[in-house]
Length: 347
Image 1: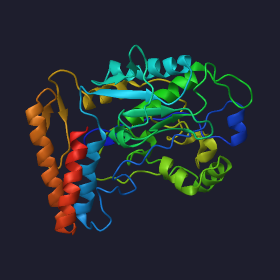
Image 2: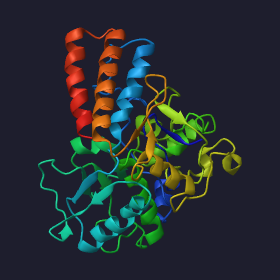
Image 3: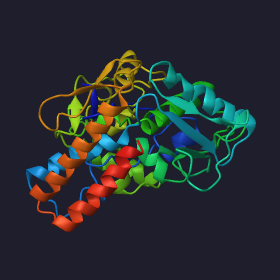
Image 4: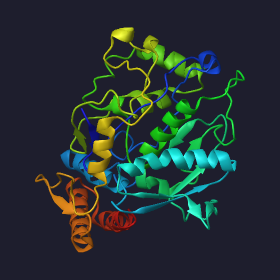
């Protein structure tokens, strides 16, 4: 099944989960700790805890609309650190998404890689802090985080594993593509409600291996637990070849390699990754399927700014109405409505 938010998110994967000792031997493991998509597990400020009942689930669906960038947008990316060669590697690989998505990843300023100014004016802010994993904030949430992406130990000309072996270009490419998938709003394919991987995982083994890597149970859950199937997720066919599908060690599955959730490492964007990101960020006057909230599916032309403005306002009014239906006080509903409008305007 292709798994996405109602407006946008697909989901892909990366390196095999292994023990810390295996990781030192050059085996990959996922240190991809992406910020939770609003409505997937944790509640964001836009989904207040006092919201109750079915309207609360619909609220999460509406809020999920805010994590994808507007089609055609120029997304400013900057670096906090890294050698020129390391920065060039990130730029070259990340731009592969542009071949399929109608967005521009703008890495340069004055002909050189853009340096982060520290004033949070850029959209995606990259750092290379070793020991802090590979991770990215989801979609437009990157605008409020600094840094918003970490690519541990990739900030040098030749990154090395702790065993002294050089990190292969293919492995670095897989990770960079995966993290920029998150930055464009994509989630993990193996966490799709239709992937059924939660039932396949040996959770005792997963927590044990996670502990060896320094992960608590919450981190393991955040990266592997199945998302709740709700109106915020458009779950179609699971793509086991997606760049967003973790390649987990067989030991983590009750049936080992016999599990349908065990996949070999995916080193490239799959065909469905390419098709799906193109449907999220269409080119020209193509239309995009957007949230089924209200229930009827709507489409819009990306070039029609006026129509887009009306759509945003309709979504904001729907959001405020759901807040009230969910039992949120009128004053707070107005306050959150104003915040929601600002978030939509910044997409």
